[in-house]
Image 1 (cartoon, rainbow, N blue to C red):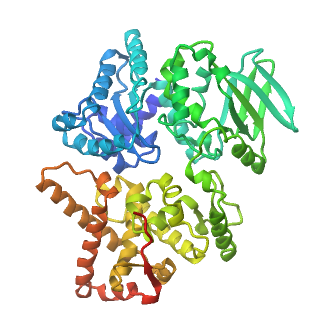
Image 2 (tube, rainbow, N blue to C red; image 1 turned 135 degrees about the vertical axis):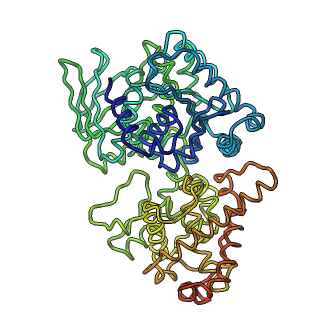
Image 3 (tube, one colour; image 1 turned 90 degrees about the horizontal axis):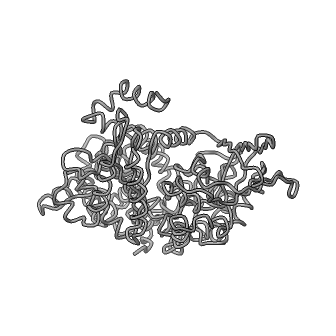
Length: 580
């Protein structure tokens, strides 16, 4: 038995989470994968799984707004040794079902119906659909042929853009290793190069290896699933809906994939240490990171089944041994000019961002504002005074614009709303206070002490910023300025004991959620918490809940003292920043 199978069996036997929350071994297997490989929280896992009667061949669904993906999982438990065409036909059935979501909802189980509400909105926003067939069995030859045929068929569709991945024992082991390495600082990898297809040399006093690497060897690179391989890249994967990635996919899936080496500009990888044994042609890379080629490698992985069967297909790799971080950063920036980067990356050198960073770090000498993706906090800066510009944008949208329902979409924050959010004279004290509020919310979240409904806990990328919005509204209502927003730094004194305020916001979100669910049930409509948090209705209902609670606060134990803490002088308030 392989190490990964032994680990899964041991975990399922020893961890009561699986036996207490899932009906059978099949569900437990999928839950283990979601929890240990995709790193979903226990609450998210329960929310993700749709397996059961009327699951329509869909065992789990994840709508990932950060990656703009809908992940649909069909799993076969690890006691299965041979896997025939049946699971592939189930995936095909799932593919056909999502072409007609209204009909699918009518006949699916309750958990799937809720998920499909979020899927529907995601597909309207052109999210990519990723099918995963999860199994530790071995595909029969007929099943392999079906997988190849199905993979080629679905990639021909323009909408939704879709791909299928076989997560077998080898892939499961690799992804699990990737997940374990998330907490580790460096990636290490070795590969065997083909004689006559590589060149070792010194360039600008740096060790360099230029190599034609087989596409099938690219599939063995670590850190692709969790994107840690690209941590020094200026951007992450743009998905298969990106124009350039569509072209890459067409070449890889077509009859001319052997020309890929000629058509492609190559991939740039840097590492802390590079060792090449010319006798065995073995290349060992320590501290590996791809700084140019994230799009290509992710697209190659999306076409993995086709590539596994291809021969004679290569891509050019440039491997550099560059331990100096400043030079590595410049290589990442200079080699990523052939296609559009994310709005955040384009804005990283904007004069307003630079002014905000300078002002903050001058005001807090031990503070640090991360403005570029992949930057790390210097050792002499305080972790509690370090904030990422992406987090700051989400905080400003939630606090000053009162739109936490938009805050999850980082692309829009740095594109459509950039001018509204980033003002060169923005107060460093406000930055610091927003960061502190979010740290306290994160602490309570990790402690599991918020008392939030599980439906809200299952969508942390939304709910955390809704809580920050709720904190802001508490001050505004208590001070009789419900139509205005307080300066964050004016609330600094409340941070001496923030827990009662955060608890108040959490309780009112629970009440708002209950009210929304009741409305949907009265209208016989399917309620999706994820979609609700994207809508203004969630903001209206939590404000109504807070107003009602504030009206009764004086009669509650400790309520009067808490309300006094929330009252701020009128001079500390200003109008909401527009974001509509």
